[in-house]
Length: 421
Image (cartoon, rainbow, N blue to C red; front, side):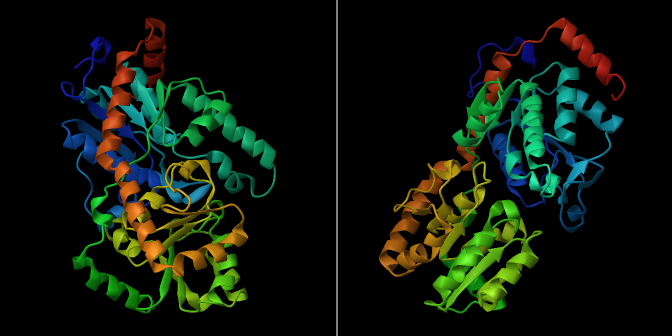
């Protein structure tokens, strides 16, 4: 297969060899790792060959790696130590990439392996499609530490623009993210493709009930307790602390309520302090980070999913919660405007102090809550991993059909890469 000769492409007649480059991948638990894993599986299910190039992680000691995954030595990311980035490029990996006859490279990180992916694409004379997953403007506090915030925001803008404008085409999960890139003066073609999930495991089944009861007992949740839950990092950009600040007002009227926090992060200590100050520490359940293959059971422990985050590019946890039949209570944000419909699949709040009254509205009407849960399930069906992969494949095909590179660019790229491959 030679990408340069493709002009008419159809998903029914053309199968690809795809190289995905990402600094985070299975068994890590985060939105990007999950997105890449599901994309690999679904693309392979429809006949494509997919190879993942990623960082090594200590967590692999606990599980078997995914087939056709190549790992590079890594270290904790300086600004976010819970995440890892590759630190060494291996000639053997570069030679392996050359031997695979890739049609396209899909980068999913702007850092180490994203840069390596772009270099390899230049050496192979094939296009790079990049998925822009993270709104860095919402993460500058990890860099600025409260100082030079304006400079850090501008740095995030310039970094994003430079990386994206040196790709052939882009994928973003929402119109919100596309608007941000356009504001940054990114001039590459942008496809909006919501990240999909494997809906199946999140559907409630009778066979799950025994395990769910056991989990509730393990974490001190009573059979008649109301469970408001959150899944994600306990970090400043997720705004989960503002939910904890509002919970005492609701719990004072409904003391059999538990706030279930599934995840870990740097804000955990602060959240405990807020809960203790509000007199609800005993109502807040911290499960820590949980294995991906068990996360569906934790959603099924909940009655309502809640989030005040404004940093989502899409919010896979929202879709997972909805697939599990949970109404969603969320802060208004463009990233979820087509996902959570106010009064239909959940409730949207503008001010944090609306949270207690919204929870009362949801829990005081069992019929309404069940109806919203059913609507949530139907909405989640639109975000299946199969549809996601089909859309990404179309994006690849458009990139291949329009791919063109000058001889001068190719010579320059090969000169740069001659030292590493």
